[in-house]
Length: 305
Image 1 (cartoon, helix red, strand yellow):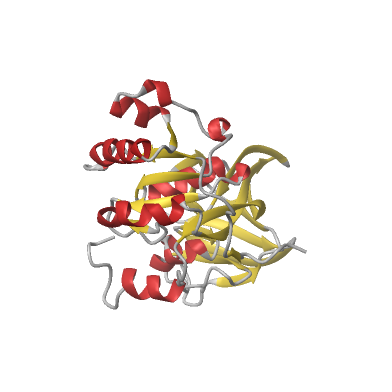
Image 2 (image 1 turned 90 degrees about the vertical axis):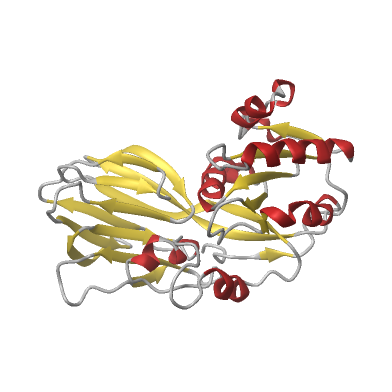
């Protein structure tokens, strides 16, 4: 029996923080300036700081460079300066080490991040005192199986997407859950999403919003060539297999919108609940419904996503 998709520990630290790592998405306009100011702020307070390689290079502090996930020993959490995409990438990298993530939104939506950029330095003392909360989120372990052999494997926090190539033709997929055939779709592809991913691509494709504490996975067809295709919610304990049927030219598997691999005819993509959990740092009183109403107001995203 798998543990619940989401659990919360309200007292993750019994002592002040020893050290933190900082990762900045250098594609964000303010990321380098914020990283420099953050480094000075932390060092002024005697906090041990380590920087991911690109961040260390950007701020001119090669002496603090560490590679993740191997350089996490002695660190209490990772501060991610960027947006949801930055946090997703960091989550895939350090989830197996159990390192908590503090997401700082320098982007537009920031649905997963905890702190908005302008409030970073007001919020940090609470986390450095060890008074934050940990929210755990489920992940998928995704494999591509070719001839019954796993040829590619990754973790995903939001979703795994099998999608067609650039030409205007459909891709056929057959979906099994727990070994049982449940659906066959012709269309632009199919999304397998966690509850966290229910507010991402799956939502855009017509899927429901699911509270992260619900123990389920979602199967959402993309522009299916039928009147009756709807999202299917299945128990998270049952692995989901998506097999390509017919011509697979240009078809790809994408993980969290960032990593991808080309697929071939008869390839099978298997997504199952991972043993790893992402640990997100939250301020006391964090509430999913409050975030939902603030970030996804009626009528669409305030800044276009």
